[in-house]
Image (cartoon, rainbow, N blue to C red; front, side, top):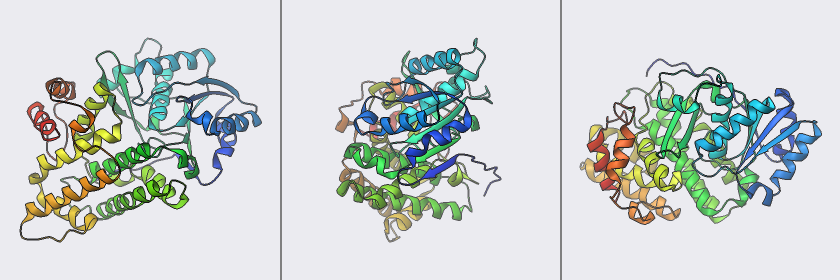
Length: 390
C-alpha cells in the first residue's frame, strides 16, 4: 500500500424528499445563485418546481443557465463563466447528472480565474494548478459519474472535439443532495449506462500493480457486486427504492477518492473512451462497456493473478489450472451482464467502424506520454484495443 492523503469535504444529504431542502443548503453560501441544468427533463418530472420553490423560500436571487447536453461542451462553460462574472454569482447549483455537474465545475473554476486566462488551457496542461472556484452545490438526478463529490471534471472542446479531464480539490461540491426517488423516471438505457460508468470507475481503481491493497480490493469488489445485482433489479422494477439507493450510493463511493487510497488506478479505458464519445457523442457508459472488455483482453497477461482474483471474488468463477480459460470465462460473464442491461459490447453495435481509429489514437496521446498504468499504452496499443472492440 502506498502513502496517501485523503480528504473529501462534500456534504452528502441522502434520502427521500431531501431536494425540498435545497434552498436551506444553498443559502449557506450566498444570495446569488446560478441554477444550471440540462434540457426539460427536470421540468417534466416536477423537480424544477420543487427546486425553485425551495430557493425562493430563502429569498435567493436566481439566474438560470439550461441546455447542458451529454458530453458537456466548452462553449456552454464559457457562457456560464461570463454570467458568473457579470452577475457576481456566489454559488452554482447543478441539478442533473455528471454532464451538468462537470459543466458547473468548469464554470466555477473558470469564473475564479483572471479574465485573461482560458479555462481550456488547464485541461490541456496538467502542470497548471487550480486553487480556487466559485461554490458548487448539487441535486443529483443520474447516478453514474460520481461527480457529485469527486475532484474530477470532463469537458469536450468542439474545436477539434477533444474531450479532456482535469482534477482538483476545488471541484468538490460544498453539498450534494441525493434522493434515489428522483431516479425512478430515468429511461432504462440511462440507468444501464450509469451502472456501467460506476463499475468502470471501480474497475479503473481495482486493476493496479500496487501490492498489499486487500482492504480496498474487497471494498471495490463489494461495490461492483452491489451494482451488478441492483442494476438488474432497477431495470425490472424502476420504482424500487432500495435498489435505486444502493446504485446511487455506490456511484458516489466509486469516485470520491476513498477507494483509490494507497493504490494507483489505471484509467486507460476512460481515456480511450473519451475519444469515442468526443467524436461520436455516444453515451459515456455505453462507450465504456465496449472499451473495457477490449482493454481486459489486451492487458490481462500483465498480471493475470489480479484478473483471477477478480473472477473468483466478483463472479464466483473457480480458479482452475487453465488461468486464461478462467479469465475469459470472467470476460464472458461481464459481457453477458452488459448485454442483459441492454448495453453495447462492440463498436459495430453503435455503428462505429475503423475509419477514425488513427485519429482517436493520436488525440488520446496529445499532451500525454502514455495512457494507463496497469500497462502503459501508446499509439499502437490503442489501435489494437480499438480493433479488439470492433
